[in-house]
Image 1 (cartoon, protein in one colour):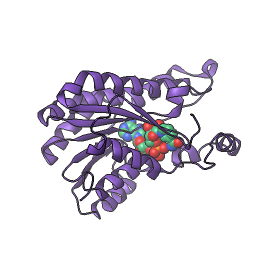
Image 2 (tube, protein in one colour):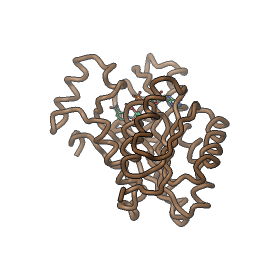
Image 3 (cartoon, rainbow, N blue to C red):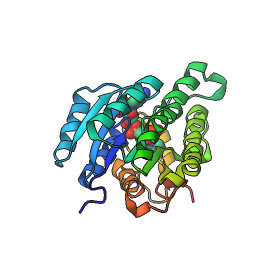
Image 4 (cartoon, rainbow, N blue to C red):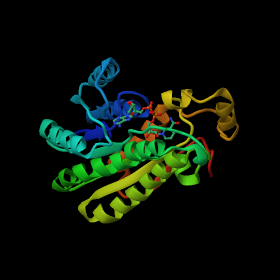
Length: 248
Ligand code: NAI
């Protein structure tokens, strides 16, 4: 018996990285998987194939999570294809780092749109389906920098802090409908996003982590499984830091 048997999960930005690890873990626990990414290319198709190997239904949808209309179209398609949505993971995210004095308006707007407005778009579109379903679990992928801030990441940190406040607000607004909303705040996780960092920055991060290693996408997927499953049926409005003890 999987923890997510019979549930339908929609995960954004899941062609690779943390989103992909969550999709695979959810499928291994019995869920049917709908996921989005900007394009459904060979990489995304490979992810589809890996998920399908667990024997559950899977469908990938091309959409820009920052686009309100596209997002609503995708959610309508997922409901038509799967019949319901039990779990929404707002995972799609980007960085466009820079010190405030050098940060352009474009850097600010792009990061806020992809990281924060996207979650509004998907929650807005998914909530009617969850209400019909008499419940659901929404998980926003925040970051430790959304809790603590980070120099040269004002746009990213602000977007990730917004995702926490968004989860808490939805948790309060929708709790009586059986809908829970929580946030995960990963620390330094080994993905394409962090592989792009210079070696000295990586070293600095490692020195701050008591467990002395970067996290894996699977470390995040485990916590995302707990929050999606009935194991956390009395948990809402929380932010769980998954960071090797970097922030205590
Ligand atoms: P990644 O860059 O490997 O994967 C992000 C995925 O989102 C990609 O498949 C990308 O194509 C997709 N995406 C980007 N813009 C999109 C858009 N507009 N619409 C739809 N899909 C879009 O990143 P990673 O590391 O897997 O991160 C996943 C989430 O976890 C992000 O929200 C990130 O901010 C967050 N996070 C990551 C940390 C890390 O150390 N890697 C730490 C804290 C948070």
